[in-house]
Length: 215
Picture (cartoon, rainbow, N blue to C red):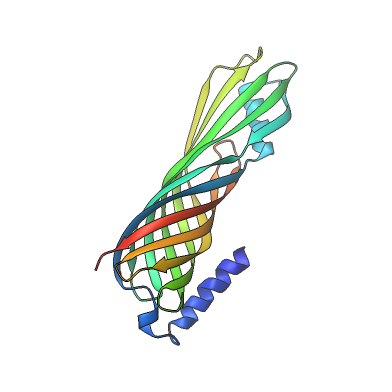
């Protein structure tokens, strides 16, 4: 996926010198929003380490995870040229969950969510008058919230962990822009985020968005 993103960005930059400006995205401000499916890869080592911190002397056993969730996002962008845009995003990644057995006895449940902002650079490759491919790369400032609860005799008070850390993202997609300024996008993005338990989380998202470009 990373190679595809880099190739798409490179092709779009090269296209600036070869394609007609009429084929690229129009210049100026645009605003939009979207939603989609999110798939996380929660770190088992982080969960085990957090069990040891929360319940000294205990050991995490089997871990089950629900790593499917929903992405919501809003964005404001500016196209500097027909092929390059800068975009500010606000996003929310809804609850991911895990449960681990704890020895000698008990269970720990956890729920993880993320919200934050990113600043992304987008590069476009026109495909005719309306279709275009694009790639993006961005820097993230995000808050991670982890809610922990002990079950089945585990002496653990309900605990909430919060951590505000930088991260990064990249992605690629396809867009269709109408002459009216309305456009639709379908894209894949990968977020790399701190998990507030000493590790990192990778979240892949697949989303649909709409935008309106101000004339």
